[in-house]
Length: 261
Image (cartoon, rainbow, N blue to C red):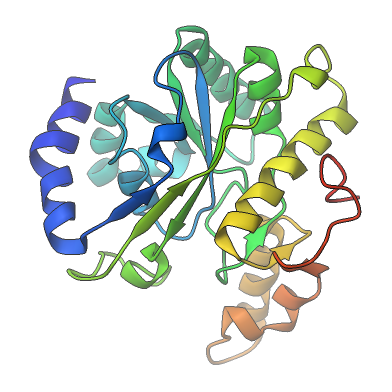
């Protein structure tokens, strides 16, 4: 993790603080020792650069394998210790989760985006259950994390971030799931844990919740763009608006474990 330390403390960290004046809230609630999962919303490529910025502990992220297939980015992510996840391969995803478990069993910190991909339109989408499996198998707390301002800093269609902007990172209260330990192969328990995490992210962020996987919506939007000429705005496409939506101000049917059915 030597390169991670250099980037965070001597290069990237100081530069980001000058350019973007990032602020943080709730840092004191993040456990300072023992295994921890940081589960965050995902709005921009640069989210992973700001989430660890305020923490003294190194954070190992699970990242999509695409980054490792490009020579210009592969070296960077390897040096940072990012664990590649191949989203279209069950075996590769399983191997990535096992690698993540090794980090947690060693008392480390894992960063994960439960949505599995960046939000196509700024809303928060249904979480994948990998985060729940890690939490139950490691019997460790999950800290919901919300990043504000990164989508404006580097929108999905922009290759490099702007040189100005404001970013804020909020670390929520740690969630524990002892009541589900031993049920890491129970799909209903995994869904309940995942939905509780996503509900906390929604509450902190104020984002609308869409009860559908972001990858599914992205695929429909891509097909729509291929079949129709011109540009389709993600926030207004019919494809992105089909799924049930819930806002942070709405009262869920049950506070815990029944956010999505």
